[in-house]
View 1: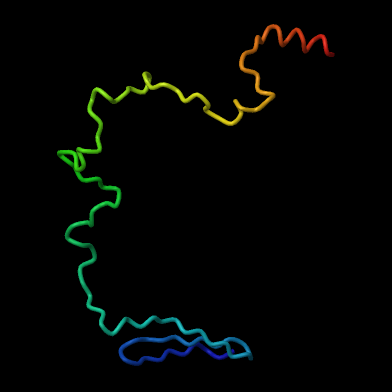
View 2: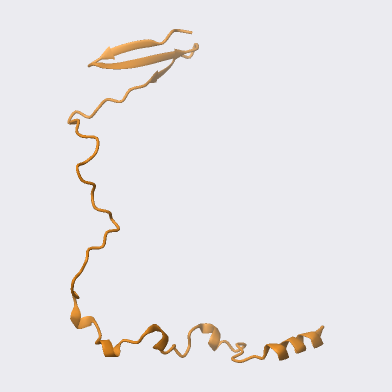
Length: 109
């Protein structure tokens, strides 16, 4: 086993660790970029949040917004005639009586 060796160049220190007879070498350093300029740790002002929604005082496209008289409230809106393809199925039961259905199930057992 060879002891660790420290080498200095360009003001940086590198430790070379040699291990067993295989001579495995490990370099433990990261050189800074040549154009790196040290600056303050934190910016003066944080960047705006990506979730930020700016306030809009008036409608951008008023010609596409229906008049208030034409807008239905959620509870007043009519439902579509066919809400799902299940309604169109030949085995779909529109109305059922749960008490009667329970009696029929008991008879089948």
